[in-house]
Each structure stands twice: as structure tokens, then as C-alpha cells.
Amino acid sequence: MSGRSYLLAARIPMSRTAFETWLDGPEARERLSARAADGTSLARHRDGILEVYLYDYYEAPDVTATELRLLTAAGRLADAESPIMYWGGDVSWELPLPGMDPITVMLVGPEGSRVTTAYRLDEVLTWLRPAEEAFLAAMEDV
Image (cartoon, one colour):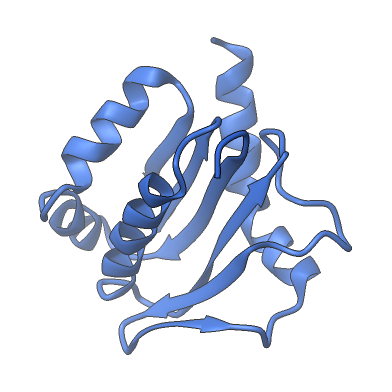
């Protein structure tokens, strides 16, 4: 699938200790550090929430799939269940507009993770908007 872009967005409530545990686990710190170097990502712990916004411009979908697995691992350390949105196609940096369906939405949390179709896109977008805003603000500085 060349010529496509992919985006993962998540806000996962967790303690700072849980965040550090996840970050020190397999691949997370290494992968996110590499992503930070290319300037197309946001990963931070802020106000008790892991915020992640990863944009792959014309990357292979397996790169994004690996990062999706990293986020499901973070969900195991979460304080509550929350959505991860996987969005792709001929897309820009922003989250999809209402009426444009994501590739998938996963719910992740201490009890596990699962793909779901039982979500309200407007609620998912509202929840993810702070991560998007922080990512877009950082992109202005690049």
C-alpha cells in the first residue's frame, strides 16, 4: 500500500509510574526516540494521561501496526479503558473530520484490548483532540 499515510492517536489515563514502566518495556522508548528524531510524532505523559500522536507519511502499514501493538501494551497499565484511533489513506496531519471513518478504533485498558465498532466518532475525536492540538503546535515549531 504505497502512497498512503497512517496516523495513530491515543490518550490513555495512567500514573507516571505506569508510564515509566511502559516506556522501559520492550521497544517503547527506542521506537519513540527514533520517531521523535524525525519530527512526526508526539508522545508524552501529561496530567495523568499518556498522549500519543504518531503520523507516518507514506510509510508501510506494518510500521504503524507495530506501534499499535505498543499502545495496546500501554493499555494494560492504564487506569481506565480508552480509545486508540488508527486512521489512514490520503490524509493530512489532522484527525478525520466527522463523517470520515477511521480504519479502526480499539479500546485498551487494564482488562485487555479489542477492536470496536460501538463508538461515537465525535466523542472519540473530542477525547483525542488535546493530543492532536499538541502535535500540531509542535509541528509549527519545526
